[in-house]
Length: 215
Image 1 (cartoon, rainbow, N blue to C red):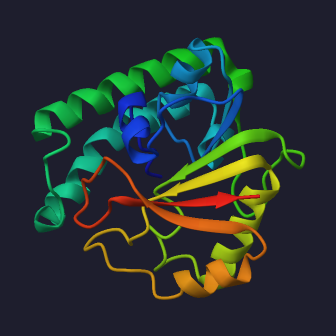
Image 2 (image 1 turned 90 degrees about the vertical axis):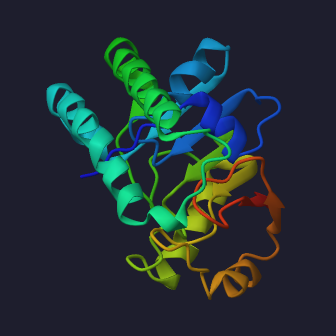
């Protein structure tokens, strides 16, 4: 199991976050520090991930082991990544290590913020969160999860959102191939409004857009 740790700064850029609403869900949050840092800013922040089913000691070990695994994926597809946002691999590694440490501290002291669950069925009531974020799951793994799964997952993210859903990125993992059925999915989601918006972040080549869904 790969449990990626991403920092608050990465989330700000990936999702073009200029301000935070009262409540946020980070879906497929892994070992990221966003929930901890958003909560520290007074937000009702919750993270959901299947990995949170693990006992704490095993979760800690999994997060630690995932740090070098994530770097290996980048190394295997070096030509598919750019460094203008991070600057260099060392800064990326530092951000990920700091994020993992912040996550592990928070999941120990505030476990109620971390809920075990996975798409396409989330354990929350309708309209629970003002904003729902989902990074590096939908579209990223389009080779693993088919069109029907994506449609069900998108509908579920909309269901638990009171206002807006933001999803990043819109290309597949590895070489960054486009997702051919994305336009059809957006048609199937109507009357939910959809917008593809450029963001101030790019690491995987061509992955500089997010999908915004508005109820």
